Image 1 (spheres, helix red, strand yellow):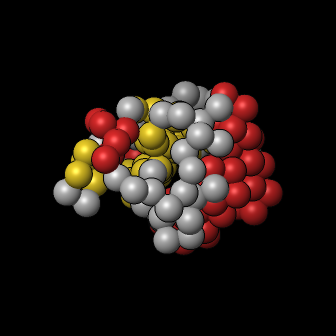
Image 2: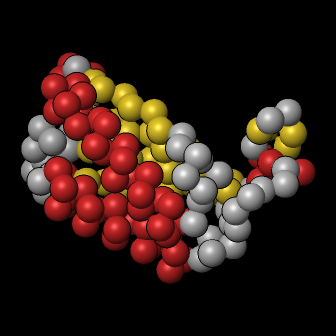
Amino acid sequence: MAQIKVYGLAEKLNPVKIELSNIIHASVIQVLQLTPEKRFHRFFPLDKSDFYYPSDRSDNYLIIEISMFEGRSVETKKQLIRLLIENINENLNIAVDDIEITIFETPKYHWGIRGLPGDELILNYKVEV
């Protein structure tokens, strides 16, 4: 399980949401080995008055937050971060300095999914990658 939130300026984020979602999803499938139907993305297009960021970032600045079950290796998480930055930079021409990614991990039993605590689910993918 991975749920992803993306924040950015509305005028920059809205035109690329679909392509960005596809980039994120392909990266998550490749690295975390999630199944294709596991797309949980939320976009938060913000007005300039609601999004403050450092002067060394451009208006393309993105914040990506990934919430997922704990259990992936450090190398897997680093690989995901690297792949996301590379693919977003190459496909959307967003500078690497304008992409920030944070991964939040929680125990499966902290999730409620399909009427069950996450640690009681039967998953069709492996978390320990």
